[in-house]
Amino acid sequence: MDGLAIAFMVPTIIFMTIVAPIWILMHYKSKQKLSSALSDQERAELEDLRIQAERMLDRIDTLEAILETQTPEWRKRPVEQSVRVS
Image 1 (tube, rainbow, N blue to C red):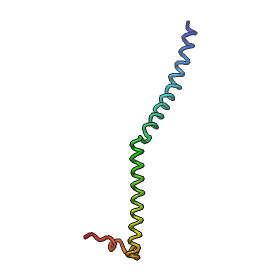
Image 2 (tube, rainbow, N blue to C red):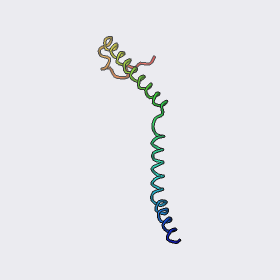
Image 3 (tube, rainbow, N blue to C red):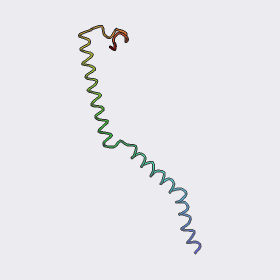
């Protein structure tokens, strides 16, 4: 009977001291990776922000083109002169 008890206890102790901690660690690492990913709503918001940024860049390019035709030397002016608050 003692031989049978040892046959079950040795693998159990090895499992509990080596395999189980590694298993638990890997389980929670995978959970953390899943929770750190973007949700669908966050992806949609990020896409909206990207589209808004592209529109703003287009508007800036348009405004710079208008300024270039109206005032060709506008880029050479110091910042204090080109930005006046009334």
